[in-house]
Length: 385
Image (tube, rainbow, N blue to C red; front, side):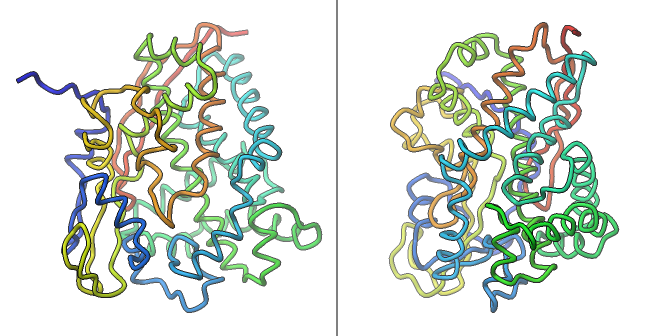
């Protein structure tokens, strides 16, 4: 029997480090994952959800909400992530920031991909959130240090957020970035998350938590995605040529296929809200926990076709988006189109820089609190201006 091709870069790292919490039943097939993630009587779990008081839904990150409170909050933020919002408000930021970063790269002749991609992600997420008074070039290192210091000392996502709030780095982020934006938005509301929070009477602490939530969901994950895509492109001449010659639809297909192979989020925890006598997992008691293994689900041949560990952009035809890389159901990532657009713009323009080459591939690390890979210190060089 012919051996299956495995082109995934993060597979060995994930296999060595993925840990499922005790008592959680693992879901590994696409059909089962879709059924359970879309089930109306299944609740968000993991990431410290059991430690979060959801008594006041307006003061809790949307990530932890379910049912009507979650639906209400998602509806309120939906306008920030529509194709129209991307084209009218964010695309100009994506393009201008990318051009500035790449102009600086060309002037210096070298750059670290994780640093410049993170600055792009910070600029775009800041526009969405409303962190309007800070220069992304100065804010990005502050947020990077803040997240790194907190992750290194946290045992769970809820505890991580508490560390952020109490730490010197969290205080500096609040004073230099959050508080000035809040002050301006009180007088001049805009189309952003902070303005919406103020209109609903959020406390300063609640606004800070919102900013941190988007920092994790919108900045960190996009950085890893951009670096992973660049790594594939620089190592595979035929893929790079395909991407550069493609229209936007084909470019998105290539990006989605890379993300299918290399999902940033590896595990999604859920629990049953009541006894469920008939599910694809069998009968579940109230409070039963399960976890969707995203890497296994994205490699389910019944859904993705043959050779599931090989990169094939054509397999995405007919799929609405992303297989399972951005989740599914009520908690499907609201910002997935934003991430795809900024990644497409950045990668397309990066690959067109004269003489660009990756001279050092990224170092692969593991973020235990997030159960996710990290890519650091990828070095690129180019012909100087």
